[in-house]
Image 1 (cartoon, rainbow, N blue to C red):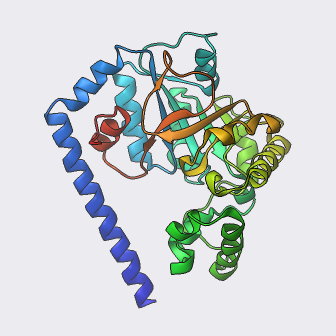
Image 2: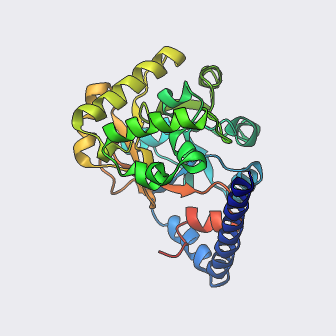
Length: 304
């Protein structure tokens, strides 16, 4: 008990230190005009900020949404973005698209009420194998893992080995996690919300580049089948877990009914340069950072 409490306190201290340092760097970026220049540069191109968030706090969510809305940004849907890439629609200047990866239970109270308040559409990318358990294996690895089953170790394993190690970790953890995922019933209810589009994040949240081609097909197709059974709509877009992408994997997606994909990339979607609906880049909004750091990161005014 004492060891666990000390570990929790050490983790909290690291997060606080990281938050303070991140805020300090962000204010340097703002004071030197870098954020303002990034904002002006964004207006000179047909670019979209594609945001990937996971489990942000209510405070950060509110601050970020209100900051961008106050500066004339327009939140658009997944369909709007894909239509713009296909040249069937022109997006407004300062377009921004929000994706929530994994489907955290906290989204119900911290994010979704604010989206409804402002009428903001969002995509929810889930791993239905984990949704059924209401537990994400990276969370278990973070909270209960031992050196051989730490997150860094598991994510780098060939996928068959990762699955076996995750099964052992799930059993040893007592199936508990401080940060649970949405339930199947939650997902069904959200799928009926006109603002939410439910999409494919892989069946078991596997690192796609550590899968064989057959394993990757199974991850995508199995997830599509479950999501369609729960929501009545088959996903048409795949969101690569951890941003682990390759063009060879994109070529396999149509076999599962997928015609669009998104990676990480930490860059804007440039509608003049991006060809096709695969490998759409996204920029991460971390869960618990300051507004200053969040805006600098999303506008790519961050140090690189």
